[in-house]
Length: 296
Image (cartoon, rainbow, N blue to C red):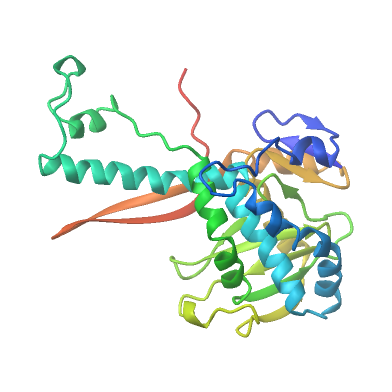
């Protein structure tokens, strides 16, 4: 296995444990059982390889859907990138609540030496900043892991077959690439599962949550064999969606240039505050955006 770091484009040849394992990464003290996610993974990891075979051969059954959907739900909730991405909406909720309470005079005035007459002023001039413990959004994701799995497993999937031998799929430290659709509210998820196999999960905006069940009765799928251009487009999304590490099996001479071209991006949360008569509505989404470099 080869890997390239997006921040400095250094190439390394790690083993999977050295780059994919975080000590106590799945331990979460916000939960009553701080290792509960491990029990969930016991139902996922042993069936991963057989589920890939089912996807390739078209023999997709309930076990296969559950395994792959559960894998995607786990990565989304527990990876460092997922924890970063989903911290931002919580931060915005806390800030918005502070602003509302301050507007109603329910919060104490800050000390004069801070240079503002209200907490709103401190937030606006960046002297007061809200910080979210990334383990908290992880705990929410873990507590919702089954509901996320059942939703993902009831959406339409495309099984993406890559037969371009010199352009295998990449993967990354956050192997859930996002893809814009014609509906601005909907982002597809593209998940590389092996060098020649990926899935595209296509959320349905009209899907009724109450219809989601573990029989995956709403699940549909179709297989597509991709052109070289389509493979390149998906690999660019995989690199841009990666947190920092991009992994690949075959070290072709074009890969370093390809990663360099797409390395200045990552997934970024984006929130919008909409003023309403009775308060403020927060709307949150994610998008691929240029990485903002810190000013020295």
